[in-house]
Amino acid sequence: MMININFDSNNATISNLPDHLYDVFKYRFLLYLELEEYSLLNNILPLTTDYGNTYTLIKQNELGEIIVPTGLLITICNKLKSLGAAYTINKDLNTTNLSKLPLLFTLREYQKEAVEKALKYKRGVVQIPTRGGKSYCIAEIIRQFTDETNILIVVPTLDLLDQLTQDIKDYLALDNKSIEIGKIGGKFLNIQNVTVSTIDSLYSGIKNNKPPILDLLNKTEVLLADEVHNYINYSGLSVLSNIKKAEYKIGLTATAIVNNPYLLEGYLGPIIYKVTPEKLIELGIIKRPHTAFLEVPTKSVSKKLLDLPYSNWAFNQLYRHLIVEHETRNKLIADVSEWIINLEKGPVLILVKKVNTTSNETAAHSELIQELLKSKGYELPIIHGNTKNRADLLNDLRNNKLNGAIASVKILSEGVTIPSLFSIVLACAGSKERDFVQRCGRTLACKNDIPLIVDFNDKQSYFSGQSYKRMEYAEENYKNSVKVFNSLEELKTLY
Image 1 (cartoon, rainbow, N blue to C red):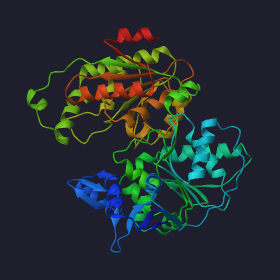
Image 2: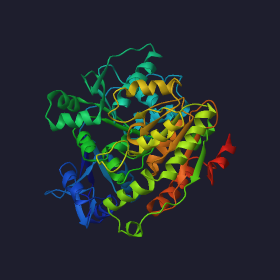
Image 3: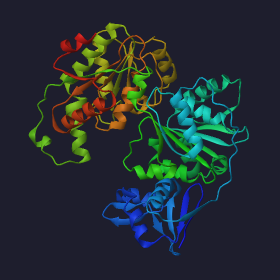
């Protein structure tokens, strides 16, 4: 019997699928969710409980039909072909018209290939490293549609809202094309045929049943989701699931590493084009950095604390003692930052996790480092989500008017472009490859010299393993760049 597949922007319905093939896909699209996550996502996803906290992204309805997110169809159809299973496929979506313009000459070859893949497959994720020009790919995709097309570009932060809007305008100006671009986020609620919005503003609009937001999502024909790895959560997937008529759903990211990759694939599709950092290094677009790990002396901590079984509370206590309030480590951060400033090759960005505190017993990591640098005669501002003059400070960094800044990893780890940066000091520890690569990417376009990434080889508790993982990530992404230094004096031999 012929397998029939019907799909719309969000879900596909598969009928006449033999039981043995249902089992194949049931155990292919596994997710690992906490009960709370499942309770939330079950409202917007076709989920089936497997066992424990394991679920599968596929569901059978009362008619015996199989429901899956549309993004999984590429994988499903490829599997059906490999098994020799016959199927038909029908689209329940309006066709969006392309203008079919020649691509602008300013695009690099890999950018042209990325745009062509996006327009050909209509769904999927384009992975281009930081500094690789994702913004121009987004702008060129916009350029390829007729002026009447409703296009929504989603970004994770207000900083990116402003930056990407300007990047799109600058790119389209190369073709003497001027369009009004709408903005949603912060104080803006301006909807046009092409609109850039923060994901939080869209989710708030859905939650509060705001007609302008609901109307925008309902009429969107093309979705371009920048830094798409940020949206694989309840609020992000709620927004994506409310975009029900888009024929094109393209995600862009520097690192498509997420906890549950099939959630990303289900809503947008698989990775359809990928550029590695090594490729950009070969092309001379970014530089291979020096990735220096400074040895951190051990600190006396109670054995009782070190021996506690893992819990969020225990981890946070250890993070406070061994990272935030590690006096020798903080002095090392301040000393290496002072040396970098005195090299006069460009600003230094010190990234920390803890920029404020609700406890009277602990100081924010940013403030501890700031005080140490102040005692050396250097005034570095702290940048976080509530910094009112954040845009001015970022511009001062770009224009070399500041020696550097101490910033929250949540604010400046991704998306924000500061070409003048010479060095990143990773004071925050951490074990996720995606976060590490995003953070390092801030400085890889340095023009004055080989960019410098300074990290720390912590030796205690969870942080020892985290340091080792970051060394692995650095070597995987920036080959032959990693070196461990026993002292700052050894590190100084690099320049």
